[in-house]
Length: 102
Image (tube, rainbow, N blue to C red):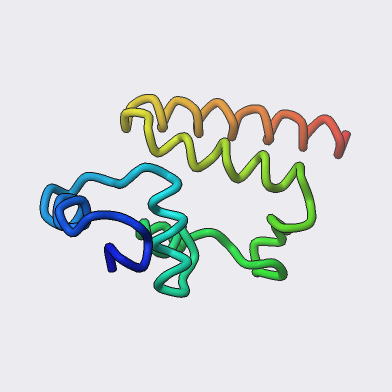
């Protein structure tokens, strides 16, 4: 694998055993060598495909892509902060929805 992507065996072993993620260019090379997406390689295959039941079009609509990226960033927050963000978002959506129906 190291030869296929231009990395040493030591580097490949480090990524496999230390549980550290390689730099983005190495991830891209590994994904290409294995014939998978970078997301799948990183265990993040939860991105909806175009036409998915979510209604998101991540390949064609920049607004959908921007929103999806922001929501994925929420995973980096603590559980408490995530709950706060979702509670706030729910309150805003419900208030705006009530404004439209009035």
